[in-house]
Length: 207
Image: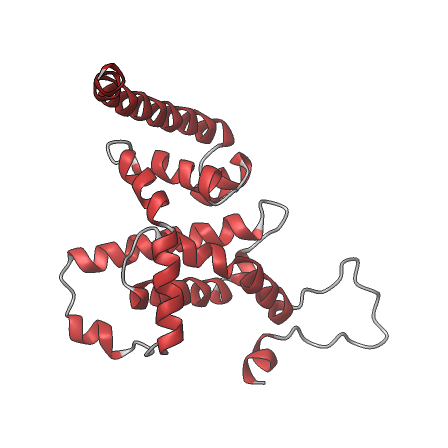
């Protein structure tokens, strides 16, 4: 397999001193990261895009970036999931920047891989399943981007605050502060919605 040959670590020299740490197997490590996180990354983009092709492309771009920068991943500094979601966030930012510059659509489509019908249906189902999460992020639209992503990574993707902080490149204390602010905003939005519905409910009960 070409990619395995290219990425496999060099063979140990015979007769030398034993290595104090087990050599990393980049292919096996990437396969494990991909298998454990592809659904999470797909969901991340399904909350941001409504076209299956876009979700598929951005997911693929994320793992291409992951395999090319695998050497930078240090499990002592954070989890693989946090690291991959950090890459996904940068991929999406680059995607938005590309769109804002009105990049030639023909050139963007030229390198696309056509999806099979069942792949499109699967991604459409994923996009539909993430509708409530998209609405949650929209409720936080007036907050800074980092606050919105903090809620998404912790309350939606299930990362621990420390993992989310590592993915965003901020201190854990800063992440917790932003998370509290965003959650307070959600509680305020929810209480406002209840208050608006109360008069109608009261009138129905009195009639």
